[in-house]
Length: 452
Image (cartoon, rainbow, N blue to C red):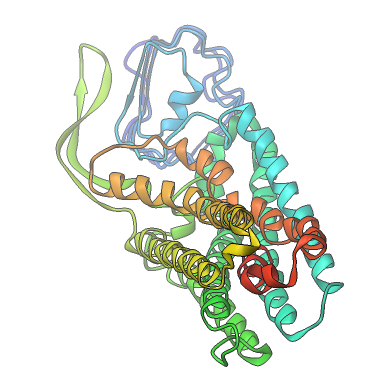
């Protein structure tokens, strides 16, 4: 200590500071702990240091921080640190100099605002309850060959969407558990087993849902284009297809867990445990320089190198999902065009059924549009934002991860039960009671395939 008001203990081997370390030194206004393997500071250590104005904590290893670790420091004017969490704790400090930063650094909760917190719980439970109802309903419906095939696909879609509900409940529970001080434990959370399991469930759910929607679309195309042909899914081929989908989805989801010891964790690329390609990882080169006038350490950057956060994330969310969306979009266009041509080719002008046929075409087009639009709003925002961020066109805020997993990723998980099952329950009996035999011949295949 060079004077009663200064404490210099930099470049020592201090690993812990207990509560009595500064007893009787209440006149200190400057402390420097730079370059110490400091792991823990006992809460209450700074209780009597109300005059402390400058604190340097650069190149320390504070793994465990509590909300009251620095309780008692009330007059701080300058803080030097390479741990953004300290700037969060001293948010009213005039100057907080961060030696290094990360795009995930944030002083907010896991879910930054009340809207996200409430919506996360509502959509999570909605996905769980809605898809449970779908599974129960599918077990009690028609057991014909075609119904079994469609039911198998939609039941597996419901299972995949049910998993998304589990993921959302896990994230919502973590938000409640950590509360306003989530930023103190963010790094531990991203590396925890719970976060990795949640991320695995989310990717498994998302990709299985994507693949099942693709196979449902292919099944509908085959049923409409070749209604009496043999080129369609039977019970055995449907089971094989579903088994293959789950196998691929499990492999895609588990690869990041296997290689996480060699490559930066895919499930640790965000606080919500899913490595959406919304940011570009940057590497900075520079040096620490002490500013004697401001009495803080400052980091002078020489060069910043940016690269994709992980190519795997880009391949899955920007590559595979985009191609499958294009497949679904083109398939429903083909279905609509084919059904319209078929209806007109068998139309009888004398029967006066033209207006009825047009109404059915509009209804069919509307249902197909809803299916395509839900897929669009579920996948395309992530794809578009990913492309913009990876090309450097925009820099997206870290809070966008929270908004994405609440309002974008679970869209299909919440809407699919209504789109593929509940509408069928409401519309099936009405179609059977109002359609004439001729009208059924023209439209029953397409409408039932679109609604089932």
